[in-house]
Amino acid sequence: MKKVQSREEVTKWISKFFDTVRTTEEFNGNEGGIWVCGECDNTYGGLTIYNYYTTSKMYDLGVLRKFEEMLQKKGWFSSWYDPGTVMIWKI
Image 1 (tube, helix red, strand yellow):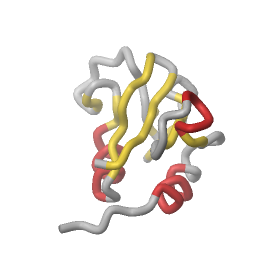
Image 2: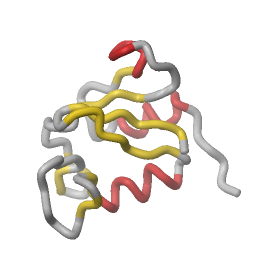
Image 3: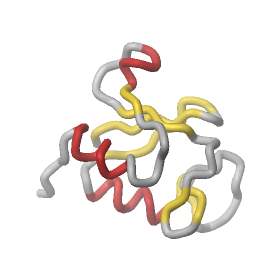
């Protein structure tokens, strides 16, 4: 079984791709998650990470598959809060 990385470790990794990375506690008080912008055109491998409205096969439910695969290897996953807001939670 893979080791789940801590929120601090994942936040540090995510910060390479996002200008602003905050906690879910700061957003709405829910504990344990990471809050990022879902509409800010942040990129991974030259492609936009989150695009709520895309129909591209490179995305699964609006999340760039390659980014989500890396995130899940760390033991975390993306979850849309609304079209402009993404929460990242432990699996």
